[in-house]
Length: 299
Ligand code: ADP
Ligand code: MG
Image 1 (cartoon, rainbow, N blue to C red):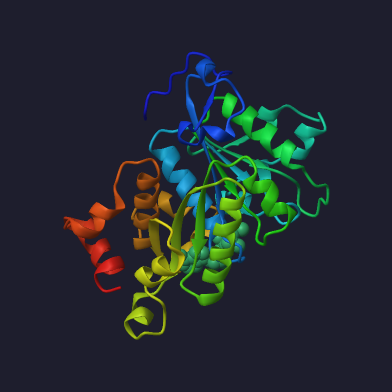
Image 2 (cartoon, rainbow, N blue to C red; image 1 turned 90 degrees about the vertical axis):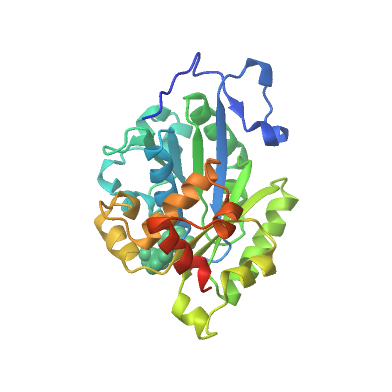
């Protein structure tokens, strides 16, 4: 695992590319924390699945990652990670001074550099404010995390506004369906209106058989419609449902399925290890060649 050393965990720099978000004096910072919101507008397109798998992959690459379930009243990221029985405290307890932040940050047993913070318990109606979210994320960043991934609730109301408030970057998840794409487009506009310009696209549940029959939009079609740089393409895969029911993100499977490989590739691109455009034009070898062919060659 990557050596994680900090001079002082209380000094942190927000992503310098988007330093407008940072209110602190950057000269006092000595590590970078990227705060991303994973959003879509439409529900059920794969935000929570993407948050769990990308977060787990980035943690396995050696980074300290905090995953935030920002859904008030309908959380489910804990289930995908198999951490539902370990949550005693939520962010709301932290805000009400009922516990310390580290007590509400649940560490994954498999990868201890991955933590989960749920904003609220199920059925809890208490709402947080943008200020609350900003301060919580600053506090988490100051604990030495490299990445904070915020799983955004569906819709574009107050839950969405709160979830995007501390983010410097966004990942928009969509399926190749016209309804999801329209919502993704709307969300992209709202992100820009809120000062988030660094946005990438994840196209989920792609079925190449349907694309071939012209029954589904292709990835280039989706990308053209949205005009957002592509981070990754995830195929439709029944193993996603098996993994959800087991509470084990599928990137942990010993034998990775195509969607697991696709999530891992997207995670590597997210940390800047792999350039997507090289993927499209440079022939891969071995399994990567097959993935490229499957995902892009015939799409
Ligand atoms: P959201 O958080 O956007 O509401 P979820 O991540 O909860 O969406 O996913 C919604 C449903 O779609 C879940 O049942 C999940 O298992 C399923 N799903 C997500 N991605 C895929 C995929 N690539 N292949 C098959 N099923 C998927
Ligand atoms: Mg969700």
